[in-house]
Image 1 (cartoon, rainbow, N blue to C red):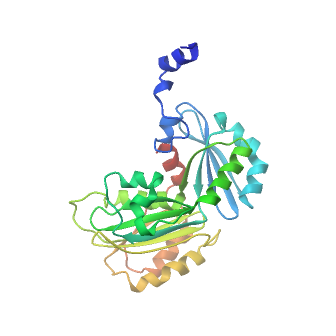
Image 2: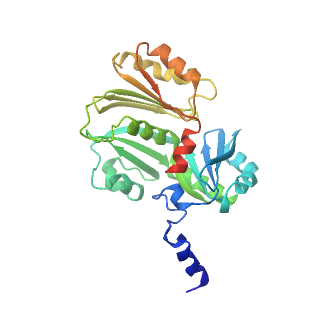
Length: 289
């Protein structure tokens, strides 16, 4: 046994998850270490540092093709992270859909990450990475699918500039799960509730209709808007005729977006609107979980 082995036991590092163990929380893997959080769109790169005390540090936003931007800012990112470790939120090249009758075997939400065929059956497609969230009340599930080849190229590009990837997630999917948790729809036995969820993240939009705890309709599109909210509002407008007046609207954006809320109020007149958006919400959720 070497001194390093003994020291790793004495300072408890031997008992921590490996840095690339995506099944474990970010803070558990990198206690008292600086890391970097990245958010990538079709023509956008945003980043934020996580300090050794777990608080968010500096960051910036760049317009341009991600591979080119990352090559230009790699030195800044490596300076902001011990050993270069980063988490990536993908905001393009993914599909979120509503599925029924997927396997509910114990632990299936984790199993799908390593053995998706066992959960998806005939719906499984080779060359995809998946995540799933099951409704606790019905046989519906929210399914996230990302292109495996694109993710491998992205991870390779980041490694080439000295940024090993500790986690890849989808910002819209993260915020949708946050909204569902906030409204207690992950717990059985509650009084059935109806909501219309609107998720906006780095230009992507997802809308989910819930009727008495039943997930009825989901629409998701990437690269819908940039700095102007009208394209997103046009996507949401058709739901006006399908949402009863008593249904509460839950809005979650990756950062406060006043123009979006005002536009939703104009379309869905008379509905109660709850805005769960907070400054740095996506960064905070990624760094804490």
